[in-house]
Length: 245
Image 1 (tube, rainbow, N blue to C red):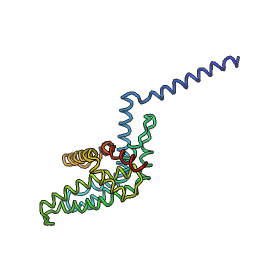
Image 2 (cartoon, rainbow, N blue to C red):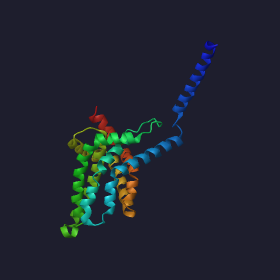
Image 3 (tube, rainbow, N blue to C red):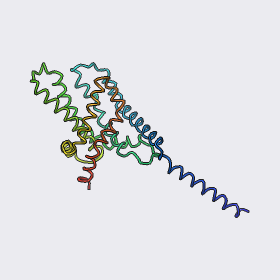
Image 4 (spheres, one colour):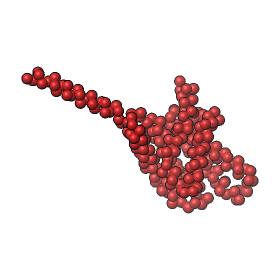
């Protein structure tokens, strides 16, 4: 009797495994499942970003909108560089299998791996932005001509586009800081599509901040990171083909 019933149990077990594997392989193929996974990643990355920079953002929110507070505002943004780098890392290494949803694990792995490289780019840029912001908010006291102020504003926008490139490169590749800086400048001109796309993101962020407050871009940071990484795809593809072979 036992030898006769064993094949039946084996067949039943095989059928269960087959149904399970079919269910796992078909999971995530529907548009609804993919949309749910995308929303889950967006919310998870946003939460991780806010947790990482929350203390400094709270301090910045407490500052008066006064020109004298520009250096303090820049100091409050110091943790944003590594956190932004980690968010870029998550989006780049997001698993294709929608059943494997672990953005927090990838975020902290990217944070640990990129924190030094990100700060080597982020800190000098914040110092430059502090100096430029101080001059632009004290034009009368500085006594600079209008044309010089316009030129400084253009350079400031260009530096923001440069740091966007540099943080993407530092987050996805392992170059020396000086090489990352040079590549970021080079691809400002070589990949016009990337530059224009990041300019659109920057303009939209500035407009939203001006109309509402700094809190709105902060709540959309994961979306902005995904947009910047998507814009940077021509640049990252070219770097991978030319410099990492």
